[in-house]
Image (cartoon, rainbow, N blue to C red):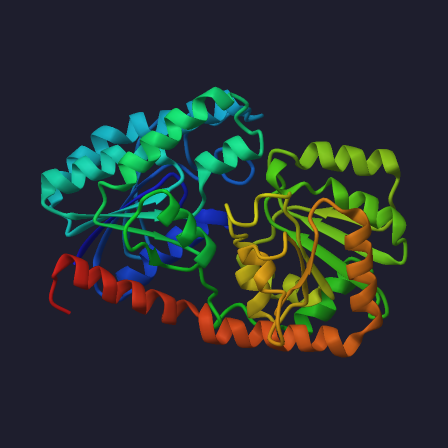
Length: 410
C-alpha cells in the first residue's frame, strides 16, 4: 500500500502532533508499506527551525524508511493570532506544488493531519486526481480552540471559518480523531460515522525506570522524601500554567519541575523569577532517551489546561504518563473527555477544576496524604495504557482500516 501523509509537524519533533505522525509513518514503513510524507522543517515547540534545516528551502530526506519531503514556511518568534494564520498558510502554499507532484506517484490513500485545516483542500485534490482515498485525522480542533481560547480574537470570522471547516470535512472518505468527545464534536459538525484513532504510547520504550528515577532526582538534588510535581510538554497560552506558580508558592515543601518549551515559556520563567520561588525548576525539552527516567522520577504529574480546552484537545503528554503508571492530576471540567478519566472505580487520573489554584493545592495535598489512593491511580493508569493505548495495538487497527478503505489486499 502506498500511503501519503501530509501535515505540518513530523519527526524529529519530540512532542505533540509531530511525534505521533512520525511514529505512525515509521510503523507503517516497518510493516512493509511505501510511505511518503510532505511536511515542514521541525520547529515545534520552540517555534524555531531546528539545526540542520532551513525555513526557506525545500529538502528531501529519508527517516527510518520513510521518504520525507520538507517544504519551507514562515515561523514567527512570537506567534499572535494573525501570525499563526500566516504561519499555517505559508506551509499550505509552499507544499501545494510538492503535493501535486505526488499525484504521479499514485498513492492509495492520502492522510492529512489537522491542524492545519489549510492543508485539507490540497490533500483532497491530490487524492481525487491520483485516484486515492482521502483521510482527514483531527488531532486538534484548531478552529474551535483558536476562537474559544482567544488565540484568534476576530470572533466575527468564526461562523464563516466554521462553515468552511464543515464543508471540507464532508468531502473526505474518512474523518478520524483521538477521543470520544472529539468524535461527538465531529458529529456536531456534520461528519457521518467518524472513526476513533487514539494517540498511543510505545510501551516497549516508555515504562517505569527505577534506576532512572533515582538518577534524575539526584541530578536535581531532590530527595526521596520530597514530592516532585512535574509538568512536561508545551508551554503555551492554552495550558494556563501561571496557576502552577501560585500553587508552588503555597506548597513550599513540594518541588515543581516545568519541562518543555513554547511561546509562553520565557514569560512564565520571568514571572517565576520575580516571585523568587526556590522550589520551581525549569528544564529544556528532554531527549527521547531521557523520557522514561524523567516520567518515573515524578511523584505527581500535572496535566494542566485552561477551562474549555479539555474537549477540544487531548494532551499528548498523557499517553506517556499513563504508560509509566504515573499519578496524574488533570485540570478539566467534570464530564469532559479528560475529566471522565478521573471518574469511577477505575479512574486513572485525579481530576480537579481548571484555572483554580485552591483546587490544585487540595489535589496535591490529598495525593500526598493518601498514598494508597495514589498507588491505586498509578495502577489503574498502567492498566489503561496496556489495554487501550499500546502503540502496536492502536496502529494495527489503523492499518486494517486503511486496507479496508483502499481495497488493497492484506
